[in-house]
Image 1 (cartoon, helix red, strand yellow):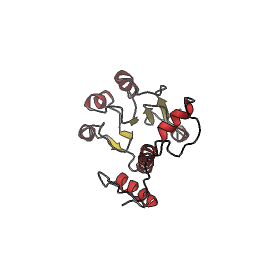
Image 2 (tube, one colour):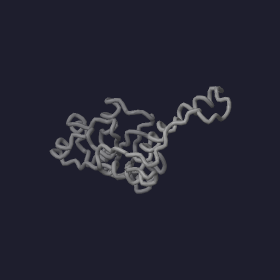
Image 3 (cartoon, helix red, strand yellow):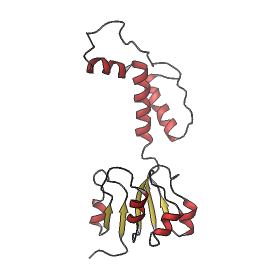
Image 4 (cartoon, helix red, strand yellow):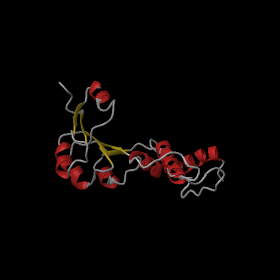
Length: 175
């Protein structure tokens, strides 16, 4: 029998290993089965009688939800930020709030460069030509785009993500 003090609600399906480590540790895990944000009613029902909530930034964790879950002891937000959580309301009720800082820094910097290079080298336009059967073969003037090597890169905000983008810029000899 599962310890009643070890009940967890997970608001979305998780990638592997998902809830397996919690279950292996003896937690009773209930997971919303749909790969979409839960409705407010689903979320309120899901936290009933739970001690832990693993949620995403799409879920609003406020006084109403915390009052509906008086046994809740921790809100583990699967997000870098926690703007979706009323931290003061959680603190007033003795609920710990956690997040996952730094987990998206490199992924976001990589995607930033994917967008920069896609725009500079007209990748989407070339992909469209090929997929629609309009590409007739190579031409020296077709979709030339712009070389990014040696250019000046402006970064708005030199936090962790901005710094990661800047590190990647070195490979292109950017200023």
